[in-house]
Length: 283
Image 1 (tube, rainbow, N blue to C red):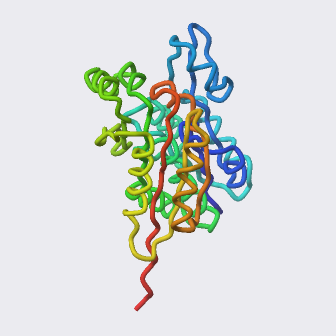
Image 2 (image 1 turned 90 degrees about the horizontal axis):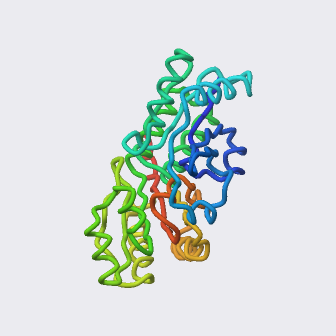
C-alpha cells in the first residue's frame, strides 16, 4: 500500500507536476468585494488592480473531500499525508487538521512552516518518497527533513503591499521608497524575515544567487525553484545563473500563487532551494 499526498494551492505547485505525482491540490480562496473565487480563477493582473481583495484558506470540508478523493483515486493508497502552508500565516493548517480528525487514522497533517516554492519542494520530496513505497511515517520524516533545509529568499520592488498586509512595519516601507533600495526577505520559521536590502535590482539578484550557491554542502544535490509574480524574465535569469554553476536534481520555474502576491505585490521574484546531502556509505 502507498501514501497519497494532498496540499494547498499556496504551494504554487505547477499543474503538470501535481498531476505527474498524483498530488491533490486544494485551492485557497480570494474575496473581491463580496465575491469569492478560488485561487487560479482570476489572473494576477486582475487581482493586483483591485485593493478590495482579501484571502482565506480552504474549509475543513474541502480538505475532507480532497483526502477522500486521493484515497479513492488509487486502490493502493490507504493513507494520506496533507502538507499545508505555515499555520502562522493562514487558517489552512487548522482546517486540514479538522478534516483529518473526521477522516480518522488514515489521514495525517503536517505544517510545513513555509509557503510558495519552498512548500512545493517539501511536497515534491514527500510525493517522491511515497512513490518509492515509503510508509506514512517515513514520508512524514522526509517532509520534515526537507522542511529543516529548505530556504526561500525573494526580492520585491517595494514593501508597500507587505506594509498594508501588516507583515512589515510602515517605517520600513517609507525608508525603502525614500532610499530607493530593493527590499529582500526570507520566509523562515513560519514568518517573513527582512534581510539587508540591496542597492539595485541586479545586486538583489546577486545576493539571492549567492545565498543559494554558498549554502551548498560538499557533494550535495540541489533542488531549486525560481518563483515570480509578473516577473517571468527575472525569475528565468535567477534560474539560469544557478544552473550555470550546478546541475540541479529538481528545478522548475513557476509563479507565486495569487493569495501570496496579494500581500507582497507584483514584481516579486526569488529562489526556493534545499541541498540533499549524500548518504554516507554503510560501514
